[in-house]
Length: 130
Length: 142
Image (cartoon, rainbow over all chains, first blue to last red; front, side, top):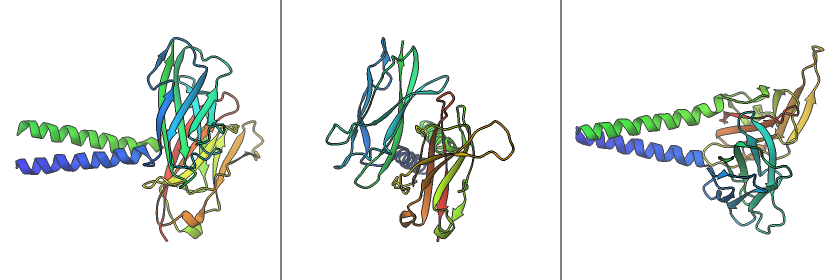
């Protein structure tokens, strides 16, 4: 009886791990760093939003790799970030904010496509401005 | 024994919640713009020859170039579209004042082997810059 429960628990853990791996997307393509950091509570508007990716040589496909900065509540897109072509590794997406962000919570939704194997990954994180 | 049962039950609930979350993510859409339909149907199994050259999504509202659509494998997460996203205004037939927009991308049919594929779209409307995202899944079986 005890063994049966143990096997059931083990099976569930394996399934959870599988589900988590599906949710994360392409295995070798992930966010390594962000500015602002996920969950940051800022006292003033950031001047730029930057995402640094861990990606294979060749970097990200510029036209298809993007991020959207969405003010929560009205769900309004306030900026769109693109691959920074001045970075040789093509692993950075950035947007300079021309207008300061008002008080509120912001969602950064990103999609990244790797040049080498067209790997697809997506994700999101939030930060807030007081 | 009791602790094991509680652990199993908790893990099971977490797994089911995760799976439901993953599956239902594409059933819900939030925001302002409205997805009307597509020339590839959610949940349908296609032969490659039955698929259109371009995936076309129809929306109510005028979309900005900030909108995007992607088609990728569910398991391997590899892109199977050509990346040539187009946004076109659709002509009204009823004489109404509502705008409709078509968001489309060409499929890379050489990469469409048997399996499950996910469509992910992000629509930003021209009126309020409103962000709406959604998607659906289809399968290929030749």
